[in-house]
Amino acid sequence: MRNLESLISFFIYILAAFAGVLAGIFTGILPGLHINLVAVVVAAVFSGSVISGNSTVGGVIGSFAVATFILAMSISHVFHEFLPSVFLGFSESDAALAVLPGHRLLLRGQGRKAVMLAAFGCLTGVLALVLLSPVLVLAIKPIFNATNGYVWLILAAVAAFHLLRSKNVKSAAAKALTFSLSGAFGVAVFSLPGINQPLLPMFSGLFGISSLIGGLLNRSAFPLQQKNSVIKIKKPLKIAKLAAVGLFSSSLMGIFPALGPAQAAMLGTSAFRKVRASAYIFLLGIIASASMLIAVLTLYSFGKARNGSIAVMGSMLGADAYSTSLLFMLLMVAVIAAAASCISVIFMTRFFLLLITRVNYSVLSWLVIIFIAGFVAAISGPIGLLVLAAATAIGMFPVLTKSSRQLLMGCLMVPVIGYYI
Image (cartoon, rainbow, N blue to C red; front, side, top):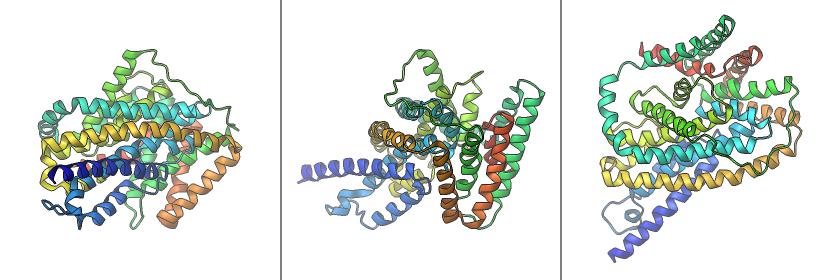
């Protein structure tokens, strides 16, 4: 009887993992469907049926099955959110940075390659972090205790470093104005009362619609897209350096609570004199997936999750969140979810390729702009449309001046710096 229960539990956990991957596909390609909301709903539905120590259905499902679903969904989400970011220029998360190099590769006929690079980056991030987890678990808490309170200084230094790397005074002035405008805008948006999901109109305008309008102004047209993209590893040492930088940047997110994937990406690119679009999107993939698992490690190390869905997972697990054996099982779930998600993304790129190649670039761009505006209106209301319009205007500034658009992330960095000073 005991062996039968164990076998049933094993299959339920496997089903929970693949159900989580499927849910992550939907949350990834539909930016308004947030993983935190899905995690809360799932936890609420199943919390009543979790009966520890009994041989009932609830006992077999257990809190670990729910945790498995949430973690698999979270990992799947970071893989699939690159699809709308690259192909449609639409994102409400820190994957919005992928719009920039992704759109560039798309206009070169390498849209599928861009998504595959991001997916392989995500897979690399998960595998590398799992391998390094014993070291990180030992290091995260003491470093956090020693450095807590210096977040604003780190962020200010990252922004200053990007400004100092400018080629000339004109470039530095454009970057400074971009950072200042987006920073003041971020402070204003987060001060607005009653706006739902402020990141949706903010990121969609700063990165999405501004990129689409930039393409329309340049009279861009979709070139013939490569259907069978092949990714060649010509410089293994460069790949290793990207992986190391991505993991280091992501690890800092576990130490400094205000650092997110966007700030980690800015910090990561500071290690390179020049980052090509393909390398940058690979780095973003590493940071996106590694940051999700860093949240699991911080939850295990000192009970603080740096991600909403992982925090919900921790509340379901309770004291079990500090179990070493359970941490090992969760890391294995992450590997399984990452492998399944990588395969799923590669297949789904064909659907998105079919979508964009069947429609004129200008027509598709306007359709996406209209869809984003309607989506923002439905989610964030009329005030969201005002935020979207202002964000688009600010996002156009670096497009027209041809300055770095990374500094548009001042919309998050400046409010955080102000909060911690």
